[in-house]
Image (cartoon, rainbow, N blue to C red; front, top):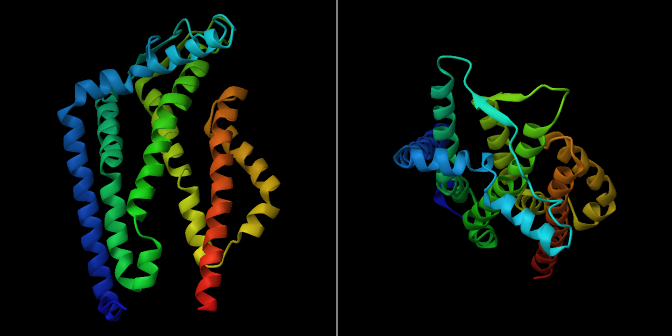
Length: 269
């Protein structure tokens, strides 16, 4: 056992304050990195999905040609424009990009600080059982971020930006555009943490692989509801969100099963 388990309540609060400060400092460093490359990030990363030559649109078009569908999956135009309707609109958009970008850049550091706060309260066996947790949490997060950025965000922008309502042309505010993209990207990154969440719930005995298998159909329905909430109301986007979540759910069942086997071996030892 670690000696830090004998820390008083105030000492635990002080340790938490220290870890939070370091996490915030990491976000500040991430913001500095984003500011240092702000033009590239804004023009190429943030505004990339607005351009018809964006890599995701090219891939969909190539897939359409490969499947023999001609140009049915190709995106040919962008029928919307971005504007700022307030004096501080552009500045608010810039701040949002910097803060969200800083959080994404600093995410592994934030998770590391959280792990450093939790780790002293665990014994050696518990620590070894979650060896590499910072790496796997970060890997799942960035995988979700990339999926959200290259798949969900472009499809959502295309659908909502080109949706016709009479002769009304979409003139979105830049903040609305950023809120859509950042919510999809960050939301997907967090959703990809499902196997990690199930791992800890299984360790605590709150869920089992049998429970997850029993309610697989219910999880499928919840999955569709969540997909409908976080994506535009088109079937393609909802399916694209649902499929990875279903895969993550099946991985979670496997993870819960491994935890149960580990517990059984420990009990027999």
